[in-house]
Length: 597
Image (cartoon, rainbow, N blue to C red; front, top):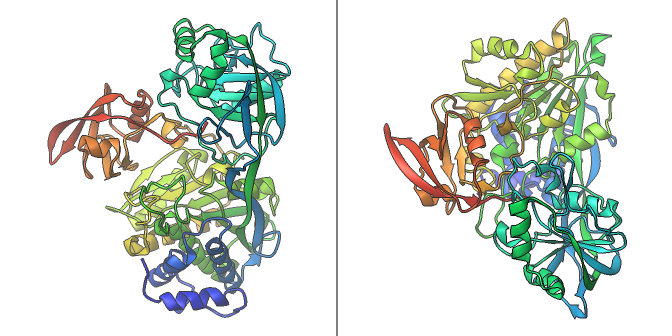
């Protein structure tokens, strides 16, 4: 993975914080391919080890970006110069202080139980109450807590709902274990035990994973094995399978007290680190319009050596993230340099932000909007660049067209020069930092060149970037910003029509393919197949075009999204693909997707 000029990278990174001169041998005010390539190769080098938040590599990347902003004469826009520091939790562990005792028996951590990330650090003791799924839902006219008193008691509940983990269920908002903990605490419970019922698959403990949400409900919350649950139910001669089957069949609660006492002692250790947004301002030249601000953003973090968001299943390896998102970061550096050189021609101001911790759940953009360094009412548009380095067949996706009435015309007008094969999407809540601005009623644009088979894998390297395509996209974005900055009127915000594929899916299943999100109307093109996945085992190949999935005809990514929601792990699904102009019939056994409770 080491690129040419590797020694130079070390020298550059060691001098960034103190050097006031140019570090880029290709540096010039125009947007150029060599400069983009130079930035990508530094940011995606092995020496930065994947730019994970809170790591030395992440810090080096931030220093590099701040150094470039300084050299381009941007005004510092952070809380500390160019930096806006914020805390992140990079891991969570259960220390030896955790304990679960049922009756007189001490259970084994990791085998019989494990605390969840939102478990409070406390010790409690009390009698146990079985409360079905732990759901109170007026919408479903269902209440597992009706007729029982759980105050000062330990509540045991099953995961999911009478509909299993179906994301389309009327119970969907009540399924998460965090929500069940909140309800139990509201009812006065002292602690919560959560077990996976036999109807919901393997007897598995919920993984101890940080869910990007600090805080708990003041009670310990443990995931427990079925054998642990059966020890509790044994005292009333009941079986978990029978209880679950009865509730699911009748859709009526069956809650009761158990003559057993439990002791829960919870101790959670958070690995707390600091990362940063890097922020620079180019002030507009118009005395009045400069108060209106265009935000230009891209996240610079990636996955480090892998972790739960990686699509790679081998030994730990550096995930360099050349496309995701060294490509977007390199582009905003070039745009910062170019826009700074023409600042006298900009009526409105441009705030350029390299966001940290996007891969952890859009944490950098969330932090900026919750702790703004400017008055966010001044922001008139947010332009986001995320994964713009794999232009293929000249196809460019631009999201956010429905967030302002004039955006579609701006892009199509600009494309008269650039001649991209455009795929324009209305939605503004795509899976990138743009979503946080859209939620604040700010018009947004999001440039993207599609997913690919190296997404979130160690193979996303700098030598696979389409630099000429990246250069063309960056120049188009420059023209778009100039047009918005100098327009007579600022963009008007509108709510966009949202599609399911633009939001986190919460699907129970995965086919293990990389879908092409630009194609529409003639099926779903497969851009990659993950080894060992359901699609791979079914015989799906890169380049196949899925036209039918189960009972659904597939014309685009949205049809595919809806089709996934129809199925559960283990379902055998008939799939028809077009391959070399011919229909091929396949059968895939759906695999369980990664989901967090």
